[in-house]
Each structure stands twice: as structure tokens, then as C-alpha cells.
Image 1 (cartoon, rainbow over the protein chains, first blue to last red):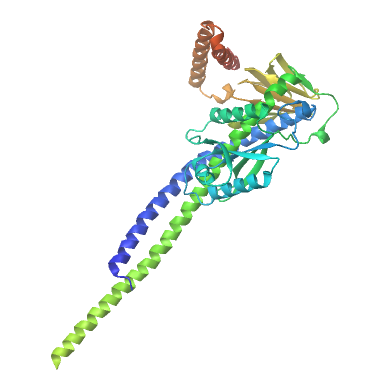
Image 2: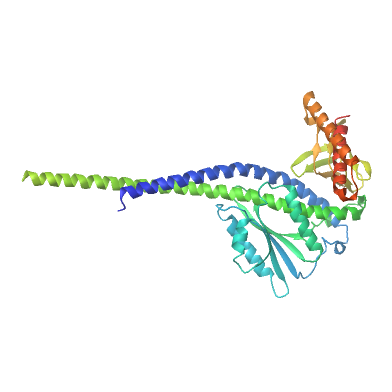
Length: 289
Length: 142
């Protein structure tokens, strides 16, 4: 039987941990609301950008365009892995890291080299110790995340892709489904895969203004920047969702632990009282003789 | 069959309405769209956009972006939108007008003091800012 003092000390320690988890849950919840709003507002724009891009891509010889043409088979693949800078968010980073590692292994071969761009401290810390090739580590994007930061990353990827440094680029990130669920997705960023528009082609050729080429110079590039931004926002919202859920569980577990420990403490206290009583009675009986 | 008009920015779906016509600022000049128009994909500059809804004309300023028309559905992708109709009080309109005037003068001065090709990007930026300020003024009916 552990002694009463030890149990009381443990209760106090669990209580203070619980205070922290509860506070973290509240903070994550507040920030989640903003992040969720951001991603949900961006999605309609992203979807329509894809639609517009598909309309023009479907009427173009895609083998000509640097960002649309497929290069088969790819000799060098870039995986852009989106993790978070902070931990304490359940399986959020572990899921991403595991998927990234698996993707790197299955896509890699003697003819195909896979390299990783890692966004977020947590991915960096894990993947550095794994047998994967890391090209670039980006940390700190999540503080004051804005479109300009995402566009910068997007532009650098496009630049290297156009230079032929890579034949395919994939994004690995957590897609925000709901507060409770995030889904790890591996999405092809480059070459851009336009949606199939062949069945909704209507009579009458498209008018392109100022010209098809001018539009093709700008739209695909913009789409890549936007996709990077969208993936970042998805990831941020997922991170807060995951953290909120994890911290909620931790708070509940702490509650349970406090209950069990309190029970133990009461037992220990009662045992102590009983023992003392027995001693007093034994003593009294001794005097009576 | 009327037109469906959708205006989206990265931060929100601005509007989705059934309209009779739409007029917007294309890179090559203003264009108007009526139902049964040929499919169109156009690059847009900052400027005044107008649409007719139940016989009533609505005005708003839109930033640079793209417009697509296909199957009587108009999609406007743009960076920013300014809707004077959302400003209810005269004070708000006044404030918006002054802000736009200030921006215009600032951008105009910046563009004029342009100092050669080394700052070409800055020049571009002030021109964009100038166009955006003018678009807002036009939407306010100046």
C-alpha cells in the first residue's frame, strides 16, 4: 500500500497536468475556428480555379506545356511533406511521417530517385533519422501563414520543376475532414492533372482573351501556388483539430486518474485510522489486565 | 435562360446569383456577357464590374483575375472585391471614398516618381494599386 502522502502528491501533480491540457485544448479550439474558416473559405476558390484551368487545358495540346506535360517514367520525384512545428497533437505528425516514408520507399527505385522537402519541425526531426533523402527543410511557415509565403514555396517548386530538376511533385498533407478526423492524402501537384472536361464540351469554340498562350503562361503557375496554400491551410486546420481532440482525451484521462487516485487515498486514510484505533484498543486492553 | 454569376476570392464566395447580364474589365478592354454567349476565358484587370439582376444594375470593383463563361455560367476568380452596396451608412461610403482617393494619389505619385528599370516591379505594383483605387472609385459612382 503506497502511503497517503505519496498518493496526495500524485493527485496534485495530475491536477496540474490537467490544467495544462485543458488550457491547451481551449487554445487549440479557439485557433481551430479561425483555421477552419480559412480553409472552408478557400475551397470554393480553389475548386473553381481548377475548373477554369481544366477548361483551357482540355482544349490544349498538353504535351507542349511545361507544367502540364507528363514525363514518363519519372526519374526524380519530389515529395513535399507538411507536418507541424509543434507536437502534442495526437497522431497528426506520426501519420504524415509514416506515409511520407512509405511513399519515398515505394516510389523510389534504381531508376527513380525520391527527395523530400519537409515543412514543419516535427517532420524534420523524425525524417532526419530515417533512410530518406531530404532536400530542403522549411520551418516557421506556420507563424503568420499567408498567401505570399505559400506562393514563394510554390514558385520555387515550379522553377526547379521547369528546370528539369524533378519529373513529378507530390504533396503529402493532412486534409481537414472535421474536428475529429483528418485524412492523410498524397496528391500530385506537378505535372498538373486537369479534370476531364471532354463530356461537357459544348458547341462553339472557346474565346481566349488576350490569347490562349497568355492564359497558359499564368493560370497553371497560379494554380500551383494556390494548391500549396490550400494544402498548408488544410494542414493547419487539421493540426488544431488533432490537438484539440488529443488534449480533450488527455483531460478526460486525467479526470479518471484523479478519481482512481482519490479512491486509493481514501482507502489509505481509512486503513491508517483503523490501524490507529486497533492500537489504541490493544493498548487499553493491556491496561485493563 | 439567364446567366449564373459566381464571384470568388481566396477568402470567400462573394456572390452567386442569377443575373441577366454581366459587364467586366478584361485585359483587352471591357466586355459584356449575355446568355448564350460563346464560351470565353479571359484575363481580367482591376476595374468596375456591373451586373443586371431583375432589371436593377449592381456595381462592384474587382481586382485582377480571370473570368470564365461556359454554358451560361460565369465564374470570376479575383484577388479582391469591393462592394459599395455593402456599405449601409453615408459615413461608411465617405470613408471608403477617402481611402480610395488617398490610395489613388499615393499610387499615382509613386508611379510618377518611378526611377528606371531597376525598380520595374515597384512600378508595376503602383500601377496595380492605382488601377485598384480607380476601380473602387468607379464602383462608388465617382
